Amino acid sequence: MTALLLPFDLALPVMGSGIARALAAGQSVICKPPAQNPLTCLALARAFDGLPDGMVSVVTGGPAVGSALSAHPAVAAIMFTGSSSAGLEVATTARASDSTWRLARSTLKSYVGTPISI
Image (cartoon, rainbow, N blue to C red; front, side, top):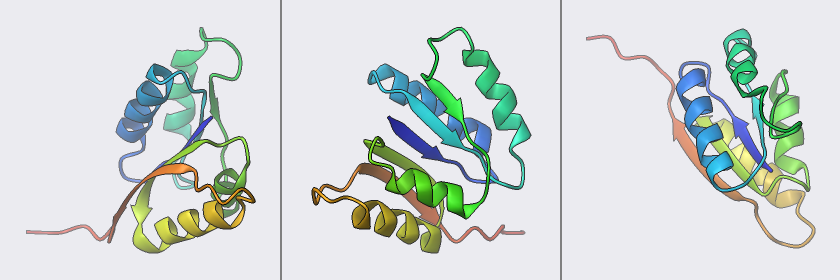
């Protein structure tokens, strides 16, 4: 299973590309949309209703949900886009919960998250 921890500002594009990558690799995917705007991600997930049950799932909530996904033993890969501090938390949680000393494969894209005005 691949966990997608989505950013508030690019949730749909990151969700779409993450689902495509996971499905192409033969993985089921569980998406955690941002707490600020989960409804668009829930709507996009309905596009995958024709797939077998459990292939694309969405769970909503705050940081505790992201931590639970990062620590879950069924998660083989984590895709995260967000702040550096949250990325460190995801990586630390994934590593600490893994009793076999295997860190889940992860893609962490961290950024400051501050908009730039010119």
